[in-house]
Image 1: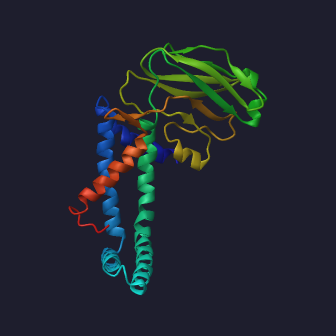
Image 2: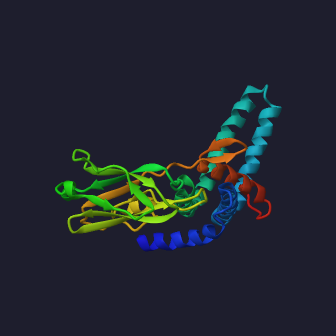
Image 3: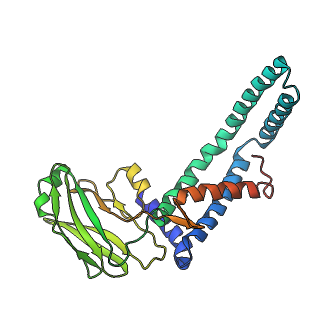
Length: 275
């Protein structure tokens, strides 16, 4: 699973990193445009375009019937019944391509979350580094310590919480760059990357997780923790990122889906897709 994540990380890094000085909104626009086109092509080649067109024509015909015969209760009820039937039929035709879209679109969303869901720390900004430990790790909770380079300052001693099986430190960003925190416990050591930026777009990984496949899928940024480890999870409290457009701040997913849908409708005629 990590091998797949590593390949995908490298691919998206290659796409984004050379131009990360550009405003994030432009990246979202480009990825939304490409995703909308990708969804169009999937829809075209995995759906029965002829049946979809026929079903849509039936829906249009019954809508016209409702408008024309709105005073005839019998015809009106019959037309509404047929509208429900053909709308359900349309949804059934659309279900297959939607299922085919789930995997590629999910991969795109998971990868973009690391770039747009959070922002790197700014110089002088503080956050919490939290380490969740296993039952074995609870036995040596008092031995956990961290080591940092000059790019990070440790602001507090470790706060240990045996009931929650965790230990936490407050750290402060001190220098721009990608820095490594080393977490130590007896003869074991673990690493966590912390990204500090001057405001430019950068991929961050809030969590390192265990070997659960589902956790690895949704946290692809760094190599997962090995099985039978003292640690379950390592978390860095990166701030969430808001995308500003015309003075209005919103979550990146909202803009992504809106722009993807718009691009899909704009290009459906170009690719000859019946939606």
